[in-house]
Image (cartoon, helix red, strand yellow):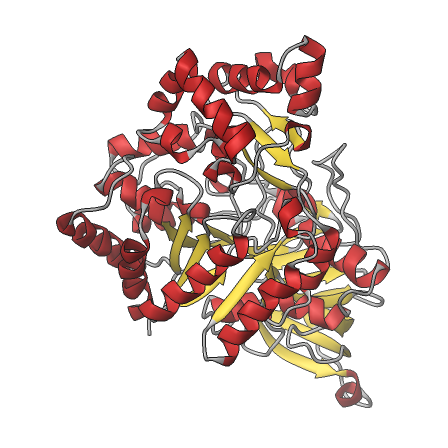
Length: 536
């Protein structure tokens, strides 16, 4: 007898095709047979050690989060219900050009400090790896969901060049190419960049092109957080399209939004740009989250010149009155490159988390509100937070546009990504709600996508980008990474007021044929492993 049969499920198989009724049989972590209702009529139905009555439930492939910041959370929190309860069976880590491999001792400490706001400092983590392969091996000890990894270009640059704003020397560029090749050989699926974050933003296009040539030669893809999502956003998108075309590398655009007032209603211009490139033969995909606010660190808004040299240099500049005055002018008048070329609007910047618990009273307020309570200018409040919290403050940016969100999610190159930061006392609800929000709000309530279309966006499309030959579809022989959800009730529990509430309407989630969510509750199973690049 087989391990499990899921009876009378409405199978939405990830291909975009219409749903069908079937019994799906699972054994040894794989789908071994699919018996459609018509084929089962008058025949003996499959039997298994365990059976689930899926009447009224949709069975789909597990959801793939193409933009996750769970790099340490998967190690710190074996439960990982934030993603498991959403039906996420695979996350892509190493995003935005900053993560924890490849590193040496110096770079590891610098990166831990730089992205404390994303992942915490990691006092509770044994950093017993330095290479990409070592990090993937660490994941293989057992995690809640599977994970793929992008080599972070900013970390590579920090390791070889440092945190200075200068061009790499030929020898340094050769070393960076070597590190990217080694990471791909060890299993990374591509390269990420954070081109509004230091030190990745200091790389010129020629440097990025050379690294992308290496990525393309291994069949990987480039995933840039490009140089602007505000002023000059379209030009920044076009820059990435041209760069990867020259390099011969596939492109996946991270959190492909059009934000800030300058881009209201301009999503069709972005989509026209992408359509022209696709029609010319480019290999492009993108991901978005189904919310309007963004999320990052408060320090990320600073101008690049103020961030040169790393965290200690940033803090020194903030404590110098004259230099702090220059920073304020760039933020409030000129439009900092860290704030996407748009003068900061402090009333849109909500404090979502702090590293120092003593600063907890700031959380949930905008910088403007916090400043008003203290009778001071918003910059004075922001500067105090940056210094006292040692750059660990996270923020929500309420700068998005619903019409842009809806237009982009309809596009043929679209996939889903949470961009979920799991730290902070009031994180963005997308970390806990992205995938049920797609299914509940945008499919059932608004009809922006059909159910079959949406599931394809969240499963087979990302699996194709990752070049996974046996994931992303409900097919015989494929891995049993599966979700059972109720299309009538599936919804995010997370809100901006209560961002850690778990979703409803997702009673079963399987990773490699093992239940991580069963009867709506997290089991103790840790079947997830690293998913490594498929060799050409």
